[in-house]
Length: 499
Image 1 (cartoon, helix red, strand yellow):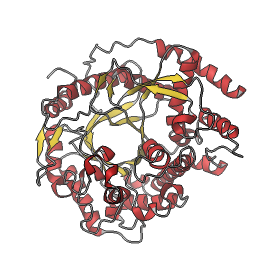
Image 2 (cartoon, helix red, strand yellow):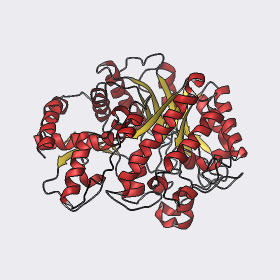
Image 3 (cartoon, rainbow, N blue to C red):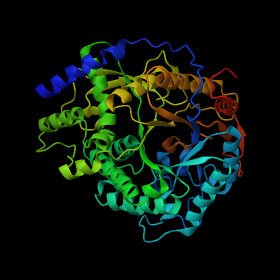
């Protein structure tokens, strides 16, 4: 405990300046983005493709969930058809071409390529679909930014334990190697996993996302360990077998709010820093420095001992694993949407277990912040600048790609989406400030999302797209929103201006 208090006092001193620094959120930064700065949009396979059982595709955990437990999703919605991008990918690429984006972030469906999850049986029709999509993108001057895993575990592998099975590291490595081999001559930018936090904390801890497995404070940490080791396996495969020829990069996508201290009290400053490390120290620190953050290790070890465990509930990395992990990150993909105010728990529950209680912090959002269309969405543009600045100082200014950022509403056919435009404008302004005034190494921005889509357990009730999709139409008709033209203008001029 003494060691923890000492390290946290240093934290308090270091970040006190960050807390009290005033950022003028009203001053729009109209300085042009650099010529090599990349603008794109993002989607994910299960959220847009549909064709869930077509042309040899196997079942994944979301297929399984929506068909066996339909009430887990709003309105019993499914991704069976979604935006029907499996059949309409050329129309999607035409939309991308209209926007003028430099890149398109999309994910591969593991079971469309490997129906049973294992690399012994490759589905050539699935391979051809992605080859066709990639060719269509490149023919239109758009670079593919490909995510290998966006929450789509093959159901066959889940029935063997999924992320809780140490063999997952090999299964994922085999899948990644196949993808590098099949598509690597045309894809140079790879992302292994999208958002380890929701995968592990919500999929294997709280159990409110597929596969609905509930093991707070134990299963979620086993998931995290195997996930980062699987990322490292993919990175090493690329580095050993493909990098010299394909000359690409392999990164991972972390989702992170900004955690702002509720007050300038030392305990709240410390609690906010603990929250940051529970996100970044669990998933990013191992890939940069070879191990979990000391703050995370000390906190969970202390609570585990108090609860009678013989060892920490957070699995340790062996020395060999630490060496294998260290330095396996070419770029950080950052998904950021909002900010939370953090205060220290006054009376932590000594028996509680789980990511969101082991940190012994309380998170809330201010009622003064503009609300979006879902409970967790608040518009806090200055949060992204503070987060980017913190990443720079914590991890020695790594290369960062904003891989998701966007605004949701819950109104169907809302084409004059001025609130989304304001969100894009103000968040991009703060990103520009972080680059220009704070020296953060941000190389690109990827808006979520190209079009309205299946938002997991929220179904089709949340609208993030800059194109509206009519989910009642067999044709899944796409209609441009006002924000699409605004974003097109930003990309063309590389400047933030009014419409």
